[in-house]
Structures are given as structure tokens and as C-alpha cells.
Image 1 (cartoon, rainbow over the protein chains, first blue to last red):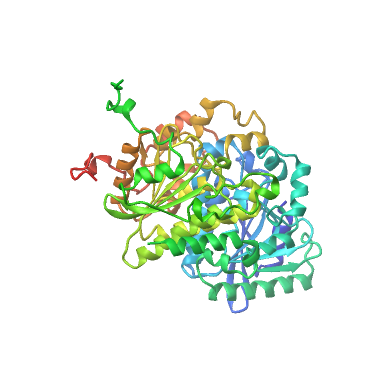
Image 2: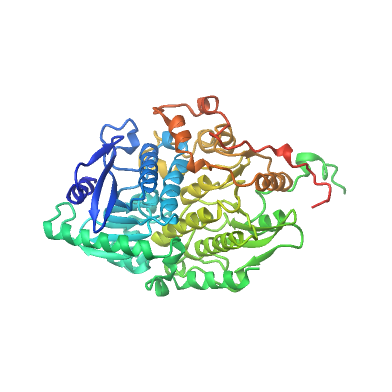
Length: 261
Length: 301
């Protein structure tokens, strides 16, 4: 799961890549005139949290991400989240310990950095699913996604989503072809207005020198755009793609604004 | 026949759990002050449900009401747990985040507008896929813009509770008020059972579910600020008290040091041992003292 995350962080890093608390890779990266902090949650097969050994975002990951984002923000550095997360950690221990609050701490840290004016960019190199993506990536002000094999943005893993909504996996896959919010194709997801840029990468697990240069250029542009863009995420509804994909949201927003007193 | 229990304490209470989202919002706010925004007669429905053979609802299961609470401006966002388990879809999400943004803008201009969120939700409405996931991100963001300017009070009454993205929203609230019927978590019991097996979490074991996620447990372990009975009067008192307590220096989700200290090395624990270990105090967040606001109020509000 996280091979591609670590491949990209190695490819982009200037200097050492550190592994913090077993499952967070941290490195610095030169992006134009900026030194940005790269963060990537990766597998840790020896994690004491058994349900968070395959790259899932659990209590330890959320907390270490929150801390790393706050540290980068304190240094005034742009943050780039390299995203390949299969999900949040599904476990009894995690729920007992209040994973909802620890994920909230990560969401708070990312939003806080962005609202304070720092560029926060997500680079989706693989899976970006559910609460794992909320904790690490989705709160970014600028989202870059690879258009390549094995890249998907989803609300929940297929099998789980099928069971919870009482449908078959085949039904869900059929819906994925019909409706963009269910799509397993990242290019169709990008039509919803949450994605600022798609970068074609032939094999995300094995970056070529040309691709790395291309991605670095996309990140430089992303940091620049994030710096100039409105700080609040509500601006996603103003994206060109949202005008069609989220027309109902735009109507609801207009109605609430008109009736506000 | 007169009901001899009618005004008699708990039996005479007006239940919150038995009320739908709209009734909860109107019951909380001062009588005659409340007005719904983008209500059912605006007829903005989810465009995604009919395409999947599901029936949409004219309020999309999200009720936004503005009014006054104890005489002060207040926004209430109430999730309708009876519609798709309170799942947050595109339209409902936009209603909630827009209202929170407007409350934040008013608060920045001196018209302080706190928000009360009645959370009754399984999280993202899976039928709306990534649009639902993004809706949660936008709600979290608008909440975080409002939170330093005016309190955002979460109320989890039950019976559904606050899970998934709405569990995260609960974690971001300035204060959290729960009943013993409430449940708060990230992954619901059923999702864990599907992902990890029944030996990890038996979703049919109600005692286990409430031992882990229950309102009493969350209060005992300092993850909620007040444990109140299922009564509009008690919820109203606690919400007014929580708003009066104002914006704390550091919210729970900002206290990484407290989270570190609490989680440090804890990789196995019986939920029953967690209350004594953690206690009700969460770091430097001042405890909510319900006695600080006299009740019932002398002026009848």
C-alpha cells in the first residue's frame, strides 16, 4: 500500500527521509523558492496497534500527523501530504481510545495551518479513502492527484460500503460507472470540483525522472495557487467543475444566504 | 384523565430522543424566535438518491434554524437521524457548512452567533460517495472558522449517535453534551465487524457498544462535557451553560500534549478501566459547571 508513498517521498526529498513513530515519513523538499515539509503515512508491520499495520490512519498516525503539521506550520513551511491511505483503523481498541477525537486533532491541525495562510497541498499517489483521507489530505487547500493505475478516491472500501448500504459489490461497481461520486476512476472523481490538478503517471509505484520533475512542477504551482486562494474550504464550491457537479449545493448555499437574518 | 406524572420530574420530561431534528431545534430555541432556513418548502433535494432508486427528502435530512437562545442570537443545525441514518449528503452538507460560515462571518463583525449541532448521524451518506466525504471536510472547516469566534456546542442525544465524519465533527466541538443513550465514535460497530470480524467487535452486543461508544463512557473519560437526562429542559440548560462558558484557550482537538499523555503506550485496555485512568478532566479545558447558570432562569427565558 505505502510503497508508492515512500517511493515518491524519496524521489522528491532534499536530504534525509525520517520515519517518525513507525508510520510517518517526514522529509523536506525544495519547491521553487520554498522549502516544503512532506508527510506520508506508511505501513508499519510492527505497529503495536494491530488494526493499523497496513497504512491505516489510527490513533498513533493521527496524533503524529497532527504534531508534524503543527510543527511545520510553526516554522511557516508549506505542507505537502503525500496520500496513500487505505482507510482509518477499524478496531475496538481505537474506538475505546476515542479515535474520532484524535482524527479531529489531525483535521484541526491541517485546517488551522491553511486558515493561518500556509499553503497546504495534498498529493494523491494511491488510495485516498474515508476517514484516513479526512485525517491526511482532504483538508488541504490544493489537491493534486495522479491519474494512473491504483489511484482511487473513495468514501469507503467497496466490501464495507456494500454491506452497510445493503447492496452487492457488483451493484456498487455498476454505480461507479454511472455516478461520478461513486466512480473508481480518479479522472471522473476530479470532475466534482475537489481536485485542482491531475498529473498523468504511468506507474505510480515506480516514478521516472521525467515524472518526478513534472510532479515537482505541479507542486510548485500548487503551493503558489494555495497561497493566493481563499483560505476557507468553502471555496471548493466555487470551482468551475462544481457549477455542474454540485449545482444542488450551490442552490442550497444561495437559499441559506438569502434567508439568513 | 389527568396524568399524575405530568409535571413529575423525569416521567414528566419532554424527551429529546423522541423528537425529530426540526422539533429539537425549535424546542431548544426561545419560543417564537426560531425560523428555518432552506427548509422543506425550498424543495432542494439530493439529486443522487433517485438515480439509485432511493427516495429523497425535501430538507435532505438537515435542518438549519436560526433564532435566539436565552435572548441571544443562535444557530441550530440538526441532523435528521430518521433519514438515511442521518447520513450527510451533498445538499445537507452544503446547508450546514454555509450556515456555519455565515455564523462565523456575523461573529467576526461583532454579532456573536454560537452554533448548536444536534448530531444524529452514521457519518457520510454512502449513497453520495465522495461528495459526502467532501461535505464533511467543508463542515469541519466552517466549524473551525466559527469556533475561535463563538462556541460550537455539539449535542448527541441518541438513538443513533455521532459516527464517521460526524464523530470527527463531535471531536471538534467546543463542548459536547450527551445523554446515556448517546454514542460517539469514528467507526460504527457494524463497520468494524465487517472490516475486522466479529471477534474484533460484535455489533449485536449492545453492552459492548455502549461500554465503548456510550455517552456515559465518553463523559467519564473526559471526551464529553456534560451527561444530561433525555429532557429538553436539561439539554437547554446545559447548552446555555456551555455557551456562557465561552471559547476556551485550547479545545480538546488542539491539546496534542493531553492526547499524547492519555494515549502513551496504551495498546490494550478494558473500557471499564479507562474512566478511572483518564478521569473527566481533559487537560486544561475548564470543566463545565452546570450550577454556574441558575436553572430554571428567573426571567422565564
